[in-house]
Length: 65
Image (cartoon, rainbow, N blue to C red):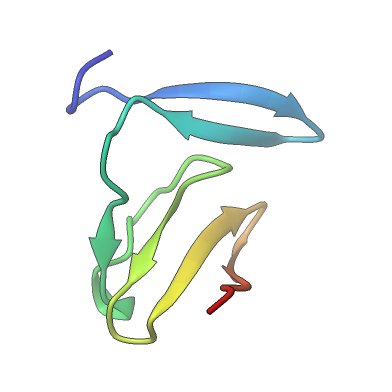
């Protein structure tokens, strides 16, 4: 595993979980990954939400205080 080549774990139904990074990737809405793999997630510092790419859309994940 390297920081430049993540490993994805296939969990079924087209979903994969990103493995291999110690920190959650951050972005703002305009700099989201251009061609994300299914299961790509990161923290949007503009909206303060964790976002997950699934099929063809970004979804926000609920955060607990």
